[in-house]
Amino acid sequence: MSNNSVPESLRINPKRLKSDFEALAKIGSTGDGGVHRPALSPAHLAARDWLRERIAAAGLEWRQDGAGNLSAFLPCGPENGKTLLLGSHLDSVPYGGRFDGALGVLAALETLRVVQEAGPSLPFNLEAIDFTDEEGTLVGLLGSRTLAGKLDPGELQNPRGGRQALLEGLERAGLTEAGLLQARRNPETLAGYLELHIEQGPRLAQAGAEIGIVSAITGIVSYRLAFIGRADHAGTTPMADRLDAAQGASAFTLAARRSVMHDFPGCVANVGDMQFSPGAFNIVPARVDLSLEFRAPKVETLERLEISLLSQAQEIALENRLELGVEALGRHAPAPMSTGAQKAIAQACDRLGLKSMTLHSGAGHDAQSLADLYPAGMIFIPSTGGASHSPREFSAWHDCLNGANTLLQATLLMEG
Ligand code: HGY
Ligand code: MN
Ligand code: MN
Image 1 (cartoon, protein in one colour):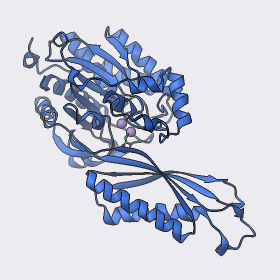
Image 2 (image 1 turned 90 degrees about the vertical axis):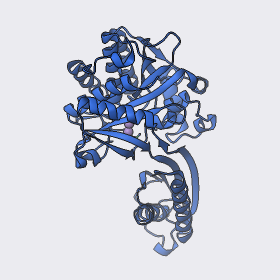
Image 3 (image 1 turned 45 degrees about the vertical axis):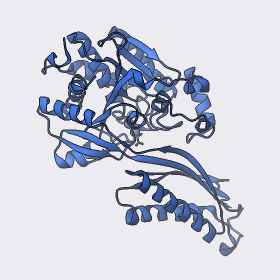
Image 4 (image 1 turned 180 degrees about the vertical axis):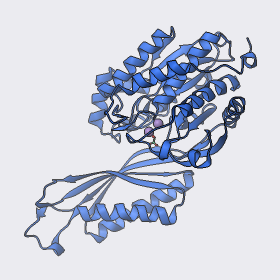
């Protein structure tokens, strides 16, 4: 059967998707609606074992590459034809939500099962993929960037999650650095990539839209900054004589927020972690290491923001008579989504009678690793209250179904 003869009434199986979603949410559950499945942690690997079983139970072939990317394959296209990737990620941020990434992987698997049952031949084969370490608790967009052949070996020496954590995760998962670096997939073999994801923000709900068609994904840069002073007795050292690292770290955190809000509309900056050392009630902190992540929709804005934040850090260190350590940890360029994929998603919404709107993604996604190599598109569904990266993360089940059906129909509408 040709692509467009596939009945427009094809839909996912709601009961099967819901039972998968509820079973997966139990793996690494934190008991408050969230999950804790950091990349290559025991919980994440348990989720992967579960996914592998579901793939086998569907009679689909499962594959795993040198980066641990786990996928289901459906040969529904021409012999040796290209493959359309559908997917997302099963890893989570620490103590995150149960929808982020998981919904996209399960909807991708469900799309393969429905196509397998309906039996249409498509202009491409289908592959549902779970990418390793999308969240960057180890490196960041690790699995999709290895598949894209973009992983620089140097990044593995000082990743944002720490080299020790990376080595332990690789060991636990039976992966190697060499394997990671060999996981590139020839882009000529891939027809494109579609991902369903929760919006992780409030815009769809505010606009009363059921589906978001992503136009572009934000650029993201990470640094570790160290404000370095001197350990002293917290009781006897005169206040004016202290080289107090906490003063620099906290002044910078406040300055970063102020300058982004005043001078960089549409951008964000976050200090998500601070480590004090030696770290005691009665010692003036000698050193504070902080994690800095900032995002901007355009490369030139990202570069201006980077210069501004780093120069403010230098000035604040000087003012507080501190030294400043600066480690660049990760850089993901902003990525426009393909117009072809956006068109297929819009047509799918028309077929399903769903109200859609086009929007930019302030969250990073695996699609941004692939978008310059082949047509990539993303489908968003509303997040209740815009909450994400928290156990409060929630999307109404009818929105999840709308998203999964949009992924299915968009898959059938994608050009080969
Ligand atoms: O951090 C992000 O933007 C995404 O959720 N990984
Ligand atoms: Mn995600
Ligand atoms: Mn996330």
